[in-house]
Image 1 (tube, rainbow, N blue to C red):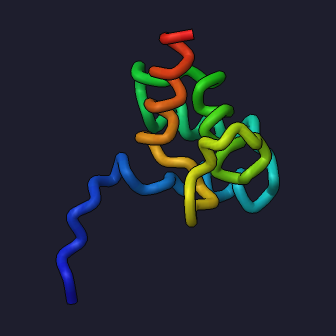
Image 2 (tube, one colour):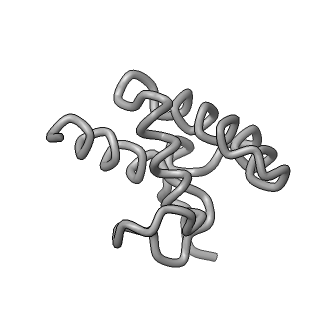
Length: 83
């Protein structure tokens, strides 16, 4: 069996998964922002969650992912900083 090299920060939390299945995007984004720490605010996390769910058609959707990752949220935060 291959070794799992992903860190816990790269894996969706149980809280994020719960809000994903209950379709509560804002709570899912809050869970993601909490996981990401100070690097990401809830607004950037919500943007990442919306992209992961394919709800935001801006050409930056995450491919093959339904749950946004910390990296997705950080990318959204960096993008917001540039704007």
